[in-house]
Length: 119
Image: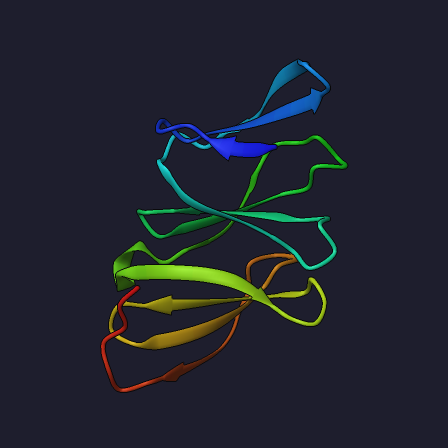
C-alpha cells in the first residue's frame, strides 16, 4: 500500500495478515495531490498541487525524480499516456494538454482545448 503524507512524504506499507512494515520511500517536501501507477505498475507518478510531477520506481527503491514543473501554468492533473510507460500527459486549468517524456521530462507536444478544465 502506497500513500502520501501531507508534508510530501511517500510511504509504503507492506501488509501481511495482521502484521505490517512501514517504509519511507521518498520525501519531496511538497504536498502530494495524487499517486498514479503506470499500466504495468513499474512507475509511480507523484503529482503535487504546486504543479510538479515526480516519478518513483518501486523496484529500484531510489529517490523520486522530478520530471516536470508546470507551476507557472496552473497545473491541474497528470497521467500516463497509454499503452506503455514512455509518456505522461498533463493538463492545465486553462485547457492546455501537454505530452512529456517520462525518461527525462522533455516536453514533446501540446494542444489547447480552448476552454477551462475542472476536476
